[in-house]
Image 1 (tube, rainbow, N blue to C red):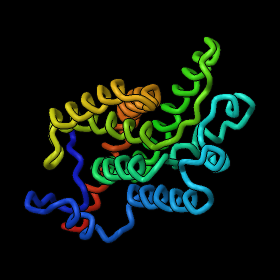
Image 2 (image 1 turned 120 degrees about the vertical axis):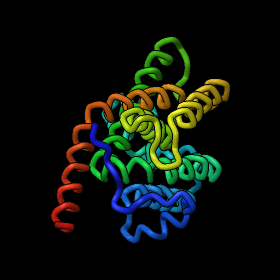
Image 3 (image 1 turned 180 degrees about the horizontal axis):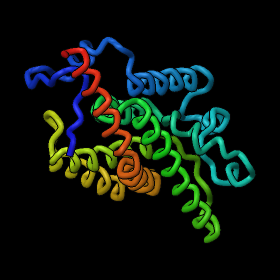
Length: 231
């Protein structure tokens, strides 16, 4: 199996911050993190992320609104967060894992996994919310990038399996343990959208299995370019 490699060689003595500094191009992952930060600032100055009415104006997910035709909320809610702690915990994890995924899978695959997985996670959450409402449970307002981030986690597990369990300093056991613990903590916590987590996670797994031929094609094309320059 062809082993795809990034544009630069891995340095085990280089930390994550140095790696970001060395990569002069603005990555898609970093761009999404910046977008989330900007949206949070805009939400804060227009009423705050703790104001439910303000969050609804910015596109938070709410099952009755989605059912009435506001399907855009399945997407916009991915860029909204309730409070600074919610934002930071999500963005730190995305900054780290998203960097691996984008460098090894490419911008297009990364974006498809992130957005597609996030949408699938929010769709699962929405369908579960409809079932809850049918049973008399009042609907809730939800937001966050967790579904999309869990899609990145699922995709990375598949990518690690295809790369014989290791990508640079990231191993399959470490990745699997982190995913397992994150899911368990979610189920033991209140006010956590576990359906979005699970939906995003499995969407990321399936998505990477489907898209992996594109990852291989990208790697082979880069190898040909590298060979052409060296010949």
